[in-house]
Length: 320
Image (cartoon, rainbow, N blue to C red):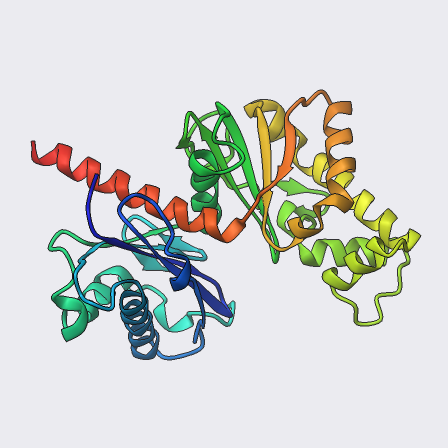
């Protein structure tokens, strides 16, 4: 096992959630923190902000300066070249200044030129990047609801739908029985793609189609109304569950998972739509159990830790 501290970042367009993890895979609870993303800043401002957060996490995790940084990982939104550390985000009002930049290389340069971080970075440390839903899936497969299952599909439901297909604890991205990259968001559905329907905006669109007056209500407020017993809101979430099954039927039949794990903001209202989603899947011949993650953030951070450990193992093998 590699010694040292691991810094894990779940990067969003409005906030960054981060924490430190020790060498045994234990999240250091007191380091879990939320930061503004500063996603509209210049490239220099964004880079400096990430360095500042790393310094802050390290100070919280090891104020006595006894440990070194063994790995740094980022769950980062796309489009992004995760292998090369290059951002291609454009037109989304977030991280525009990073477009086309070798962000990972620039970030490492900034860290190694920072006096507080430089002496604490192990020589072989490189910033690692991966899609947030993929890291959530890895975390669930090793530490969460899917840990005892051979095949799992993990979905994050929020501003869009993220996904990961896992077999024997490993992420499957390029195989005939999974969509390209393991991404379901781009699957054709109705007049557009799944992302436009299995998401916050999709749920609000469904509400309008059902004649529900939104009155500036968001998904959370609609869920609260349903939990209070509002019939129209309850019907909305039932319909959302059926819509999910309809959109995902083909890929779920092909991959045939043992379990489907739901994470993200909308999953917090899972009791309202998971029953209809599960019933509809069974009706369509899909027998997977459907569960809600115990903690999306924690399992995403643990997915980062596991991925960093795997990279270090691969590098050690290459040196033998």
